[in-house]
Image (cartoon, rainbow over all chains, first blue to last red):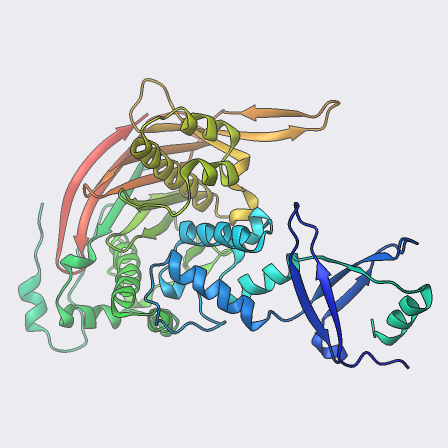
Length: 153
Length: 297
């Protein structure tokens, strides 16, 4: 079975006209939760939707936005588990935080998701779930088949 | 009318709390709005007594709040709910500690009356940094929201409204040229929309903010109408607006510092009839003060 050790894939997110590069390391199957393949086209571009546990950088960026929205001091200790309500956020604050996250990460959050975010972790996870990437590679169909065979679904 | 039982407080050192003065239930066309100003509650012994009213889960909730001010406000919120509801049980004296609470299937807090069925009391709370409010009705669900008049939002008001409010509401806001007046209208709309969703009690996904419009009723002050937009599958697809009844709204100033919105389900028997809002300020176990009684069409 082909292994994907230390393969690093970089993604370009085609949201609006900007591109965001996110790399998600595939070391073992436990580093991602689900993988689904879109329709394979001979143009060698396939669409992958990948959910990973939110990266520390994302959590940090979310924390910064939360601190700004809630006017917390810079040295307030926030963790991924920090609850917005425990920090004094009301629903208007939560919605403002979501708007700031949309701007920062160039994403669009569903209304219902917006109101359901209660912790920094949830916000970070949602951001990463929403970031869909295209992978372009030069290679053959065999490479793609190797990829599918190696990845437990 | 001020009722003071301060002297009674000082005499009792045991955990027995002084009696709560009972209250008349609101009538069907009334909402009672009670509020506490945290800055007016300074006594640490009083706050200690309050914490004795809370359930273990509520105490955890208070402990989870980050910072003394947030902890105090969380404590006052639970105290206001427990003492207020306990006072409306006019048949017998109810210990506020004995009240149980639960959430409906969508997460809206309600009293768990246990074995006493058909209790008509409904309540809803809302708070800001500087004010905690509790609305009480009988027979009909109620939702309230309070907001500091001076609250500044970080985003541009129109950008925010375009993102979250309905198209009609955006149009109304866009016609307001003075940015301060516009901001105030935005905040008023927020409280009205929040109050509706909370009265509905089905969570935000049941009524996304951009699917309904709240507009002021011309010729009235503080009375508002709800219009629901729905897409009718036709060819071409149409948007229809239903603006008839179902819910009553009232918006008014509270404590000079806040806007308060109250939304109640329209009583089918008396649909369209005016509603009365009685506002009282309180410090639980200490004093009540009648602030206003006002009729909204």
